[in-house]
Length: 274
Image (tube, rainbow, N blue to C red; front, side, top):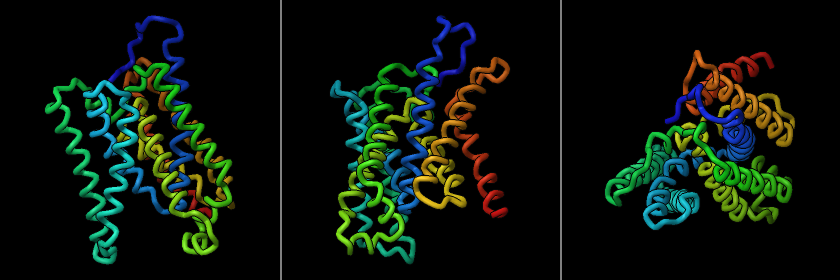
């Protein structure tokens, strides 16, 4: 994992990592807010752990690791959905199945690395290496952000209906299964795009905490999305800025994760005051 080098060459070596941090600061909270209002945020956690086997296989086959990660993440979500479909939720079996699939895919990914004789910085995959990010990482994040915005523009009313009343949306002819499939795909793109910034573990903090704070007192999904994006931008910018302070000299990914943790007491305080 990268730590700030105050002697790094180039006056603007931090420009691409900063832009990536800001794009991820928009992307993750937007996706997280959509998932949270649909009560499906755990799916993002599952996908974030399920991308590793696909990354390893893609690298072994000399393919784009992002494609492998997205395919593996979506595959993990489908496996979890199939295996948990008949598991009763009342006794916790449903949650147990989901957590087992999560751990199983993560374990498979870790095992594939030595089996395929790959050289992967597992710490960077799990916790990010933002200061080493390049233009390809930024482009990937911009494409993912574009996909989320396109989904919001094209299906906003349906997404609102789905978040408020899934059964009613289905009864009124809203393509619920198609929307959920699109959300799964967009979530996988989001997780893979955020890997360079905060890793597949800390991405959950950036998807969840700004959304929790933004939803307090929000009168509409649009307002919650705008608030979540603003909070995400502030958190990523502050985390990146702190990482550049020589006296701190810590990796920005974990700093962003800790700042997200600090948002939860703030959300609780705001909720109590309202």
